[in-house]
Image (tube, rainbow, N blue to C red; front, side, top):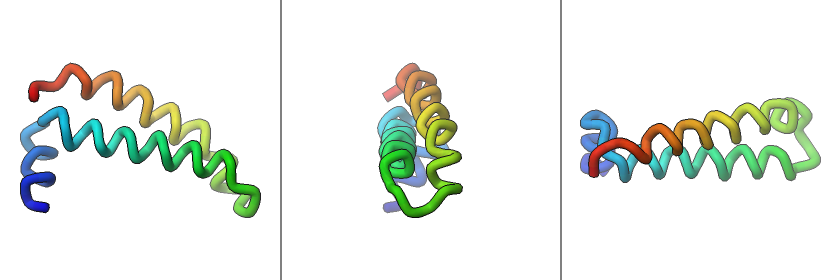
Length: 62
């Protein structure tokens, strides 16, 4: 677990890509759930932030 946080602080690609992927998955889940309106409302922006974040962090060093 500390390796994950150390990678985040050192701007390593792996941990940041995992965070971006989780954001994309969360955004898709928020889009497909029919129960909570605020989650559906913000689903596009969460997915967009995750996608842009993934594009940016894919240029980080290993």
